[in-house]
Image (tube, rainbow, N blue to C red; front, side, top):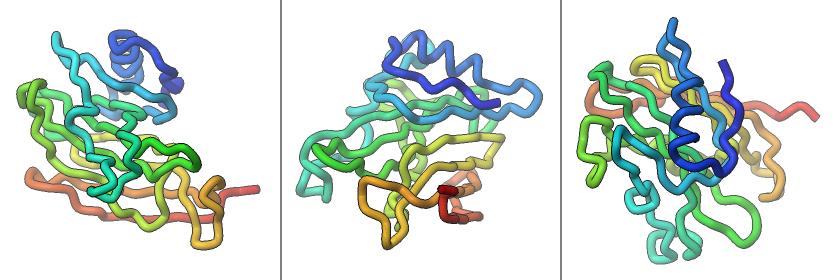
Length: 183
């Protein structure tokens, strides 16, 4: 089931939308990252994910314009009853979009200091954008668009699919496919 994209909704409304996107039969959640979301409600706490996401400082290889949180997906990755946070982020830009990555935070940790379990799509050579995440147990599927070597930064020309498996200690990329987008 595909969710309607979240567009700058208050965090509580966004959390309600994310909860409604779950498929009870499979435990899968699918959400499309299309809007800036600076914080999300986790239980009774609101987490400002920009405090914990990657640094986009120039010294760290970023744009120097700050980090933008595009989406937060909640799904129980490890079946412990505490949904993890899949934070889709990118560096702010004054021109073409920066690549997105997905940072995964442990749902059982204190929201004031969440523990990062891993970073997905980091340094992906096709510069992922417009990602959608599906989580089914320990399997995380990410689809979206990307750039071939010949594409201008403005115009992703690839569709991508990446599948990661959670081992209990880390993520392993098990599938990586891409192809030209239909015209």
